[in-house]
Length: 345
Image 1 (cartoon, helix red, strand yellow):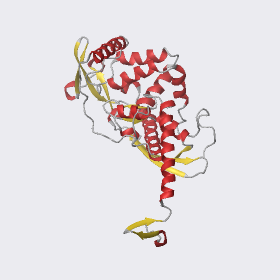
Image 2 (cartoon, helix red, strand yellow):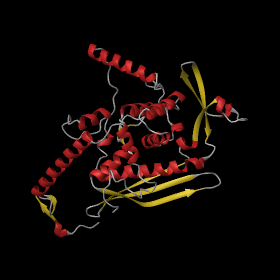
Image 3 (tube, rainbow, N blue to C red):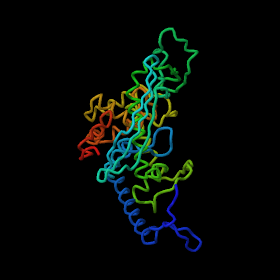
Image 4 (spheres, helix red, strand yellow):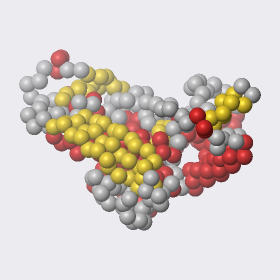
């Protein structure tokens, strides 16, 4: 794109744009620092770890979840608008693909701030396949032809087999919701310039939220922490073991050896038990599971189930109900009054 020559001048061998003098830059720098301090306070006072953001099993760095994206949009006074909805359906095979484009519009000015795109389809492995015990295999299926995995359980080694979901149509609504979630998070990270915050190692993000870091952290390569045997750390480990043993009795493992393995029946039962102990219905629990993982309960991995059990046990009923209430209608057509007071822009 051409730049008006009147806006550009040469000074001391360097090109300068009009309006970018030292005073203007200093004002913008001051505003940026104030915004950063405000966002830091917002994360500390409002954002809930493992509800609004957290570490997805199998990864080492925190990610922004849909509830957190919604809260950030409220902070910045953004209205969420679906700009495009593209669907591909095959009524014969059950194939379904959804692509969503979400726009964030500033309510005060009506200005378009950012767009985000999200796509999902039923051929993603978490929707296309499910893992079952040998006893649950359909009759007549040659188990030798199936992909299988071995797991270590209390009673020894056992196998689970991967089979296709018999009815992909059941996954269509889940896939659509996932596409919307991905689009919203994409747009929010772009609009709020939060990508740098959520690309950090988990301990660095915690330090930044608590104000212990000098500035917004920069991405560092992950290194495995060294273990030491100081007495204080030994006591902390013993305390952690005691807590893990307590969780184990409720179906939560002490850090599954393979967090990507399918969730156990005991873990699934523990999820519903933890939710119902907070007065949630089965549908409420399923909604929370989907909002946190993007999956149905029977599609969770052991790591995801373990995290969900801990989240349900450690989150108050009021916060859990607020999380459910924050869910939009299927097309984000309405905004919950508790979060979005004005009308759609």
